[in-house]
Amino acid sequence: MLGLTALPAAANKDVIVDKVWVRESVPGQTAATLQLNLSVISAARLLGVSSPLAESGEIARVEHRGGRMQTRPLSSLKL
Image (cartoon, rainbow, N blue to C red; front, top):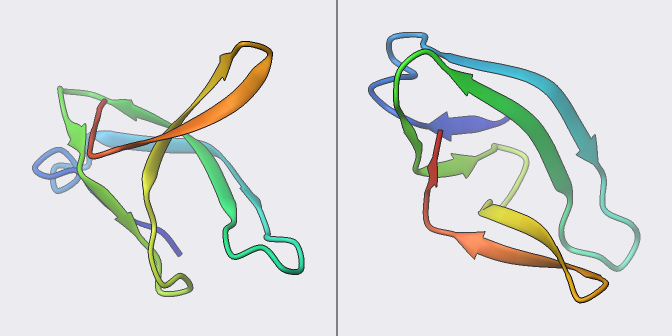
């Protein structure tokens, strides 16, 4: 359901994915949330995400700031 682009680490099976959690969108909302843990054996960078079930996907960081949760898109993520 989710394709991760983190080569060459993924090609070498050095990426471990666990604790996957998906929250479906509610009526009227166009986005769903996916959270997971990624562990790597050697340095890697997550460059993108995709799914055949979604029109698009993005890497984002969720931060607590000023008493509110804020989401900030990232172009890539160091693993």
